[in-house]
Image (tube, rainbow, N blue to C red; front, side, top):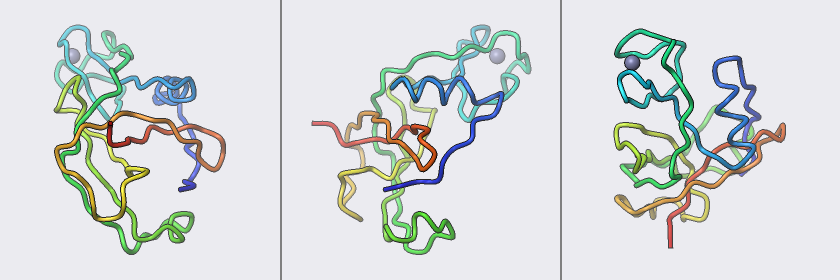
Length: 136
Ligand SMILES: [Zn+2]
């Protein structure tokens, strides 16, 4: 599925650069030992921006739940309707959630609870984005 190109900003640049290298990184506060996503200029727990780093994840997760999108306002995605939209929790920290279209999984046949692995797909402007595939 061809997706809208992502335009990284100053805050999210390390995330998108890592994605282009095939690595999934999530913001980590070294003071609180806590991951946070989406990224923010400061830790939402200790309010400090000083202790934030980007930590590489294992790239493994689980399907938490999902929906099927029948009518999206996003023109690039309209040809692909309907499509899956799943919530993935990371094995590194199940409190961290990401969305995925689950490439390779038929519409509305999503195995909730199944293990998934991150893959990186190029979008319209060449920027790669993390997606998730059912493992095994
Ligand atoms: Zn913190």
